[in-house]
Amino acid sequence: MSYQTLQIQLSPGLAIIWMNRPELRNAMNDTMIAELTEAFEVAIEDDEIRAIVLAGTGAAFCAGADLNWMKAARGMSPQAAFEDSRKLATLLRTIHDSPKPVIARVHGPAFAGGIGLIAACDIAVGSLDAEFCISEVKLGLIPSIISPYVLARIGPAQARRWFLTAQVFGAGEAWRIGLLNEVCPGEQLDDTVNMLLGGIIQAAPNALREAKRLILDVTGQPIDEALADETTRRITELRSSPEGQEGIAAFFEKRKPAWQSNPGSA
Image (cartoon, rainbow, N blue to C red):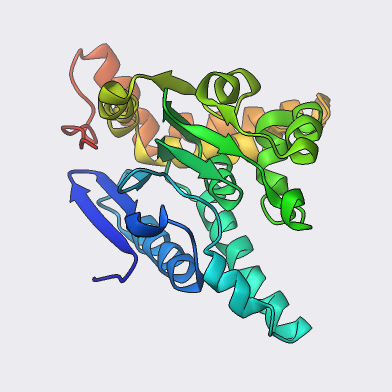
């Protein structure tokens, strides 16, 4: 499948989705948002793909919204503007709710909506040259659509700091506040991503899906008898599942489980 704004790289068990508008620092317009949503949906539905990496070509990860697209949106009716903006919300939720792990490979600038993309991923790895800015208030706007994902990553105290000042911050600060999970020199970026992929690709496919569901379902829940019963039910079901039985058997028989294969590489 060909795209105007993306490049798709496939290797065993892995899909790498490259945002490919380097001349515009991978700024998002309506075409890129639609293509990203479709590319993620295709990767999610492909049983051969175990993990997804989101990356950017050129000198930037994603500079946010394409200014020409924003300029064109000024002439839209309120309903058309709502529907246009809603497409980004759909993309972010598609990434966030993916049953397959998603890693953001971040280098260079990641501004505004680009930070939303990072925050919607499960794991984010950034190079030391990466820089970040939640810049919307400088334009008289707010980071509304990305806010559920960014708040979940960095919390309200840090959101107050960076939403309200719209200042640029570096990879070290992004790691400190939880936007990035790993930081490394640029020349080690792919190796660091591949190290994480190595663990993911070797994990049981259904267990990965259920682990993601567990995080989403348990976060924020009161620790009570109902939660204890629910978490007990889930591990009981997985323990007795074919995949769980195979994993336990492989451990005791000192062999690889049936689902393991060579990991893909970024």
